[in-house]
Image (cartoon, rainbow, N blue to C red; front, side):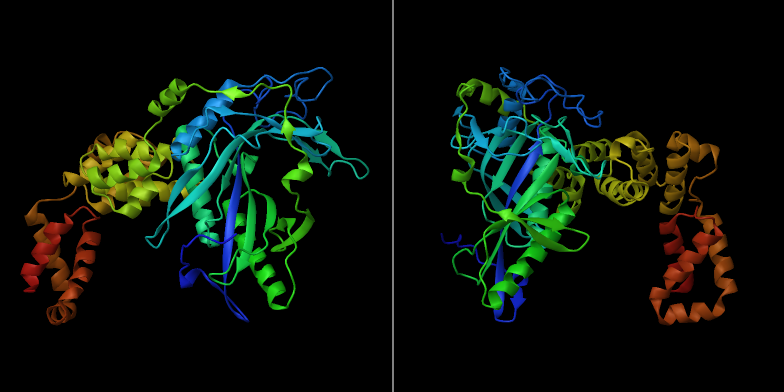
Length: 492
């Protein structure tokens, strides 16, 4: 099979002893469907419950128990397909994928093989260098999750927790369109954002709700695809990038030493920074797929698909384009602001203060920066959108300076309150009286005659004088007025 015609950028090629190599990456994302109940039973999907407390007789594969399809999981898969402009298959089927694991009580997994609910789609990914890549999605199919084997509670025994057994997963299979670890990380980030926007998956990788099987091969540029290895169950975006780089290097070293790559399944050890062999890679025939006799073919009406399409929220790309057009923010700022739906909504509420660019600056740099530092989500922000909007309004009206605004932000973060009332009660208003500002400027100039001559010879030194005046005024002097008065008095 030959690769797509996409020409790799030289910066994405990996240098080896025999020349440059290209890495080819495809991802199988396992996204837990947002639903109250499991795919084929009414058991709860809640996280963190005591072991084996969310297990129905169906999940435990008790004799005679038959699966009943959860319609909401189907609707979530359709919504996910619509969000990536994919083909929705009105007729699909469920199959049995046969393999043995202790945490798979049935001895098989109910999945979709020949006829998935969602066909081909595309995810457009903006890279940091301004490039936009289109990553093809081959399919999205529904399947059950397995339970969890626990090996560290007893030195002689292993235990099984079936709380996850039967939880609905969407397996989102990309085409081999990714050409670097950075592209792969950006793709997972974008896909996670889309799923969170539409509420189909919360994307919480710490809980295992989004994880990836990473398929990696290498080749000389322009040559056919090499033999791929699959790295199973990588559960963080950072680890996905590391696993790709480590595995690509491993394969290059083997090939340059005259060896061959065995198609196999591997695990990534982030502590050792290496992948290790798990088992030989299974093919479809190894799983002995056949249609599940307990489930009828799934038929979806076009009217239901149209209804779901009409109810989709504004998606990240559309929101980003609107922010650039309506608010005049930069493409980068628009990208940052739309990474999470909640962050975008927060910004829009702040932007109502009347200066969208200032709102973007304060939301990204001050608010997001502080939230990241404190490890808080936007929903837990001590400063509300109304409060931040009020602060920005005071800056726009020249009531407070940028320095005072930062002091006010700190007060809002730690104590709360109304920004305008705080400025009044604590005497934080900006000094706009030019007479008072001139007096401070005169004092600073008189105290620094040597700096005056230097500033006249090198006008950029006026910044030093501005800083001194602002310091002397406690940050309350209007910076624009200070600048104009100093220019006049210094003859610059």
